[in-house]
Every structure is written in structure tokens, then in C-alpha cells.
Image (cartoon, rainbow, N blue to C red; front, top):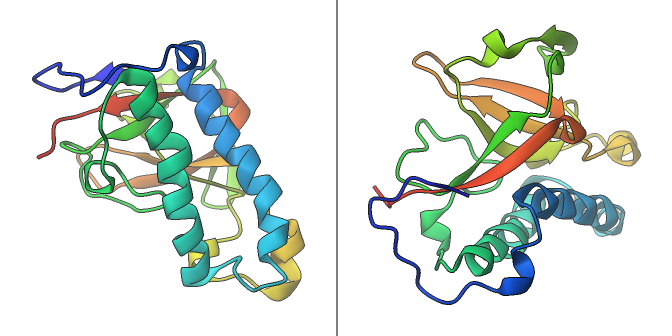
Length: 186
């Protein structure tokens, strides 16, 4: 955990069994759950648009943020955390997840092509976790019926936060580490 709170208070006892589970493992567990769940949503047409958001947003909160809450002894309401798949102008004052590359060079899917990057590409730009996906299919906005079988959750949609416009990239989930960031509510 990256703790950016002014007051380092804890609301309850941390669950000792979760101490051994890394933040990265918690996120990858959620990705695996999406991979398992998605085929079951297709026949009932809950695999895109509002139905998709209505399923994954609370699921992410429960499986990821509430696990962090019990791991670190915090209370986290939905208003205190970044909502899965939502872009924010600023992540100050809201709990979120930051990503760091495991190594360089790093392959990044940007503007529908793969490019190799180095550490200077990310310098001074926090990498904020937004969602899991495949860089092609946008489930919140809908998907063609024939493409439903091609949806994967093997990439991480991240946002690079800098002084200019927010830049969205996709990186293999296997190439990243994840860290929960606790912040005081703004």
C-alpha cells in the first residue's frame, strides 16, 4: 500500500491471512474472475453497455477494494474509491490503484499499435489502473455480437496522469505490479 493519508488511522483490525496476498495478486484474481464470468453474461445480453457496468463496478469494489480494506484495516466506501472503468481528471483525494512496470523495455498498446517504451516514457507520469480489457473491445459502450467471443481481459487499461491531457494505454497484466493507494477524501 502507498499511504498518502495525513492521518495514518486504521478503522479495524487487519486480517492476518491477507498480509501474504500481494496487491498485484488481488488485481489478477479479479481479472481471472472476469475471464470466467464473461461467457455467462453473453447469453443473457449482460456483456456490454449499462448491464456490464452494473455488474463489474460493484464486483470490483467488493473483490478488490474491500479486500484492500480488510488487508490494511481500513473502511472504504464506494465514494472514497475510484470507480472501475471511469476516467477522472485528478486522482488526488480518492483511493485508487497505481501500476508500475516489472521491467523495461515495456510493450504498450497505444493508438491501435504496439510500441516499445522505456522508463523515460513514464517519467513523472503516474500510471493509474482503470480496467482490464483487450484494447479493442469497449464493453461499456457496446460490442458487436460476433466479437463477443474475442473479448479477453489480458491487458490493463491505464491512464498516464500528467499536466496535459490524460493518455490511455494498454499493457499486458503480466508486465505490471499493482499497488493500492490510500488517500484522504478531498
